[in-house]
Length: 271
Image (cartoon, rainbow, N blue to C red; front, side):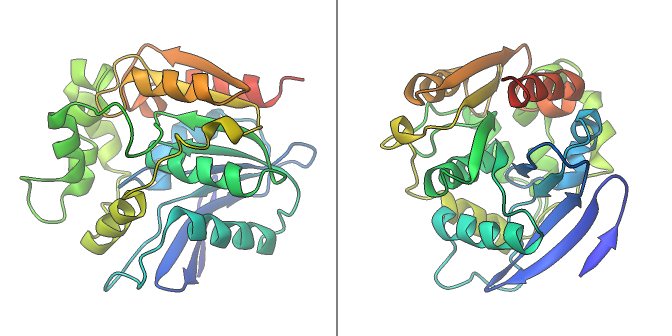
């Protein structure tokens, strides 16, 4: 199924046990396509400000898989998820090398893609992410809010959008969260469980040193979910990595879309 919106065209593609929801912009030829993997409990509409600040390169934004009725068996893992994504990208006409960006949970998918498809992934951007389960843990209050524990059923989306999770500017001005709630589509319970199971036992620490793509690590100085120490881990273990720290929290892409886009494009377009 395909629907249109500006500036991305939305596609929902059925895969075995789940559905992939993505936003597509064909863009201007001449630049490598940028593929963005979205975060836990997030939907691509939240990235409208960031997308608007990018140049006119081809763009694909991929939300975490949607699981409707029950968990697929076996549950999807990042390794088979990126295999499906690569197939989808080729079906969409993106068979050439691509730039890959991962945001938070999407950063795990991006790292896995870079490992499995080194010739497909030209450059890698990791934003507000970590090496997986073997990470420097965030604040318990932020993690509980992100998982929606202690909240009404189905309210993970609002938990994700809480000031405790986003930190930084949103923690200092909690009323700013309401600016984004209208674009938030909270995910269902099975979708949430599947996303967490995909992460269970997954860590990139053993193989980060094998990644050969030039990599930009973007991190918030006040991130309550993925503390800054995780960004230093990524930047130190990936051989060709650059670290850029923004004075904000886990939600710096929402609070500072123009600054984040400027850093990203500066990295992607450098010689």
